[in-house]
Image (cartoon, rainbow, N blue to C red; front, side, top):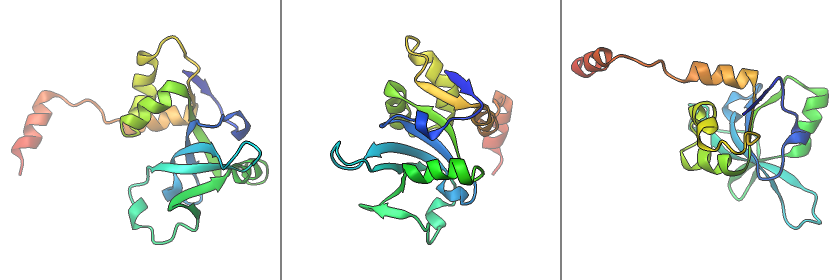
Length: 159
């Protein structure tokens, strides 16, 4: 696992799973996949929203987003332009490559898997998981604290 201060769009490869924090519209925050549209002659590259992470995502009436085949998409040029002109709009917080992105996808996009499981499962390739320091902090805040067995029991007894 590599921890950086920031992840730039130009460093994200096609097929990568990335966690993008949308600061202006947080309900668009989640796991996006970078894909090429059409043939290799077509230079159009999209990010496709695979797993929105905002708890109120389904309750948003209008995402004001580009949709293709009922999927939310955004052009890579949108992120590149915002990096240059509106740096506080998007933040790429994690870039997951190779076998790791399949592992995370199959496990339901659990944030904790990125930090806690990724380095344990595939030791031969440590460059598959690139995260920012802020993403690490997010996971630490997201992951519930371990509770004792007596606390679990008390919660089961309370109706």
